Length: 227
Image 1 (cartoon, helix red, strand yellow):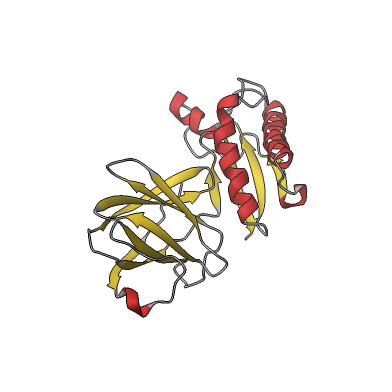
Image 2 (cartoon, one colour):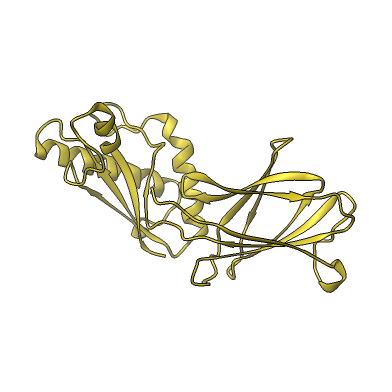
């Protein structure tokens, strides 16, 4: 998986300088944010998570079409800032919201989301294309992201290790990719936005001479075709 870099700027802003729907209080600060890639393109319909390090409560907010968001968060707390990347919540940095009264803060986030992503938490029965129930959470997260990003087109890719014949591996990988697509479509994702392709053992990412390497090669991945 590619590393995603984060550029974070946190600056205190006078509340009187803004006309806003959300209003900060003694206990809640207003956090105004923007999310772009490193070329400055706004990343709309992205999910940002703020996890309170003490209470472990999570505040979720979705950027608008211009990559902007506003949210009220409790003051006098440290937050772990995360970004939902398909099936995973990616850790980025921590930020502190001090106990300032009626405060507003601004955060700028710059990320380069990967175009290829391994769906680590998608599992199948051994040697079969039957999805295990434990995969549902990751796939439901993927459904949520694809519904938010309504113009995104993706390819679901199936891969195997080199155990068995190339023909059998190709069929198994195709069947598994098809099953993931069927699940997404069953949850309301437009079938025209999702293709599925099996690659068998032709695209290893690790050494097939070890069990650990074979485990990495037996994977389901996602490729963004169109954003």
